Image (cartoon, rainbow, N blue to C red; front, side, top):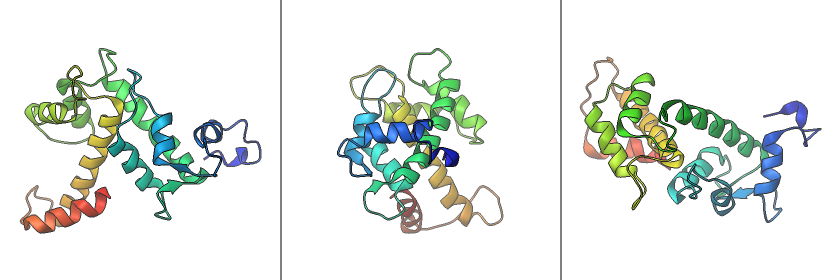
Length: 179
């Protein structure tokens, strides 16, 4: 957050973007407004799931909308993910291939097979589009992997890379993080 810019809002990019995105001038951003504001490199709108996930991440009051402070945190979050996406979109296609995703996940510390990365790309490729995931799906995939990994680590107390848990325990842990 540009704390010094709270008093000089025209200098703070997050504040400027907030004013533009808050089309109903409510002082809050809802999912519909956020979806209208975010686009992938091919000018397609962000998908509903990613927009809802981001609203939920920064909505501290559970009202389904975010205020300027939540939006500033979202702005920061988006800038970091966009930079990471651009770093791994090596061919500058505007989407990440399975090989590019595998490199990104490996650098993030995930020891996953290239086949798993390809499966993620197949699952999250925009239907009817060419293979590869756009920025919105990249954010969704990485954020969900982080959440599921945290659930796993909480149960892997000996840091062996193996846990024994019931299916319902796994679902309970991951669902609580994704909502």
